[in-house]
Image 1 (cartoon, rainbow over the protein chains, first blue to last red):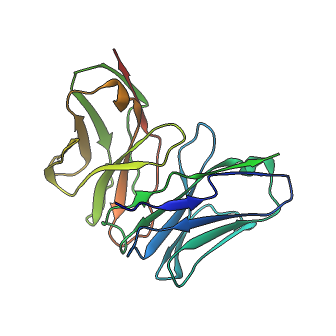
Image 2 (image 1 turned 30 degrees about the horizontal axis):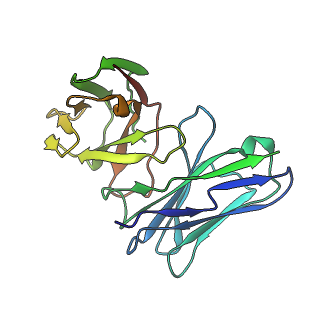
Length: 113
Length: 110
């Protein structure tokens, strides 16, 4: 079965640069979520979208922005990167809102040097 | 948002049954209880979800008492490959997010 696809899987950027992560949800899923997981930490919710509209917001820095496109894929844009942004970024998708199973991708590793 | 509390770590041996209990005293009426498994550097993997009583699938069982203030994930006959972090989460049916707390680090020994 098709899963959540994230790209790139690994990314190395320098401080103050910009990075863009992409997420392709499971076919027919209309809800996308973004999470950040630092080394040794638990996943932290960043933001979610339902039907191309932002639906919930967590601890997403102002330097980050995201959107969901008409084909339901989503992109997380991160600017003015800091060393502390180095983390594993997960995208997840579901059909509709809570109560329906949320499936996670394998993540994108961002290293800021 | 209601919070969940789990043991920080558990040890077990291959072939044993493992029960991980999660406390959620302030669970709301429309909260579902969902468990995920996570291996290092991989995305969380859905294990099981329930609302009340007992739910069973091919990998685990979930026991939820009538008051729903706790739940227990039961893993039958664990193997070394079950060594992972297990997260108990409350999934609100009107919400568009899952909030992860501190999971339970399960170590399965030979």
